[in-house]
Amino acid sequence: MTHLTLIQAEIDDAWYEHLYRSGVIRRYFAAIDKRDWDEAGFVWLEAQAYDRANPGSSPITAELDEQLLANAA
Image (tube, rainbow, N blue to C red; front, side, top):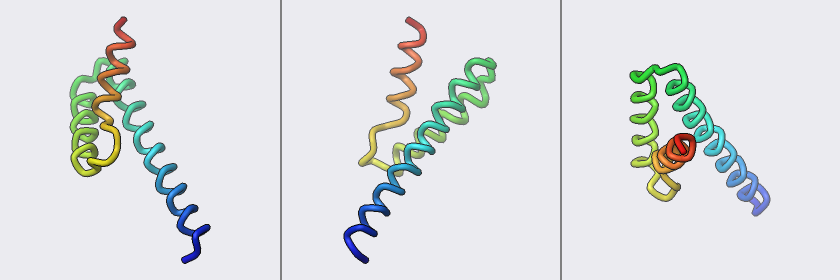
């Protein structure tokens, strides 16, 4: 593999992580807006599992908390 191939692989990984994280956040707040507490809880557990599986990434659950508090203010 060349350095450019490795760089592109890292960019692709970062992009897919961004898409996943933004999807989780979107689904969580959509469930809250619909007052679907079961779905919101399921998405929260999914985010928590992701956080545990990816300890080097910033926690999605912390981001959910921050946005929830910001929306409540």
